[in-house]
Image (cartoon, rainbow, N blue to C red; front, side, top):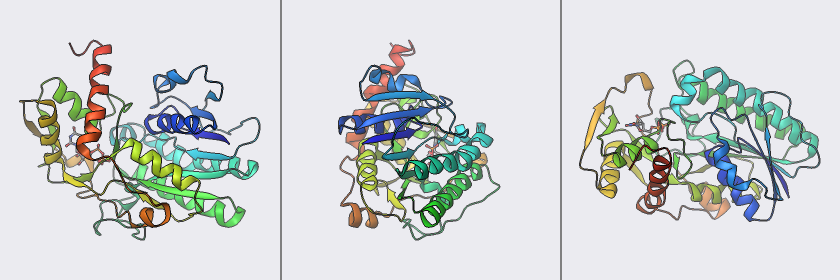
Length: 317
Ligand code: UDP
């Protein structure tokens, strides 16, 4: 198969490139490198079935030759990033999704949209099943991301219904692993770097808000199964093991032997969802998927990557 991955130089996109190449496919990664990084795909340079195109997918997308699948992963995804890049975030979710769907229609490729648990907003139903319509503030700080992804889902379903495009929608819950940007501001990179430097971990608010963290390899497996399935309805892919942010900080301090504890920081400007946990009954049923890697194992695979990255930058002895 010949597969296009938009956002292919990002955290998730680059792991998908690796997976589809390992499965024997040809992969074209497209990225404008605003939040993606060439370093994430540097190891693929020269691979005979891999190609990189630097392009902003909010502009008309042209790819030579046939395509069997398009995975649309281009977007800022960290709250810090999309607060800094609100218009780009809206454009890539809206215009970028439209362009990528147009290419899918023209080439007959199947299309998979990277959607998000943020479509549920600050949820009033817990855990969140795909049937929940969500509780989103359109004009709040997160609205640029949440509404862009909600629009992207609507556009995807419109192309499916009006043009018969074979579409898939994955709603991705908090995911971590190697290749997260050191400065992307999300909780996993922040906490791991703080712990490795022996600094206190910055817990926002009182740390009672919850998240459910999945290791990137579990997500990649779920996305691969969804892409080759017939499921048109959105599918949550996440690890239901829920934890408060404070308990998560304590787990990282314990794993790294960091004696510096935590400090509490003001949360008010973030518009943070108070709870988040995926209901994965649909993924279990239609994909036979469930996460395999627990938090301790996932962190054991992630922390050494951050240690190496900090050492390469001369920021850690
Ligand atoms: N968080 C924190 N300290 C940090 C960064 C994040 O306590 O240094 C909290 C944040 O307030 C949120 C959770 O960790 O409740 C996850 O934040 P993240 O930015 O990773 O993604 P979100 O799930 O909010 O999209």
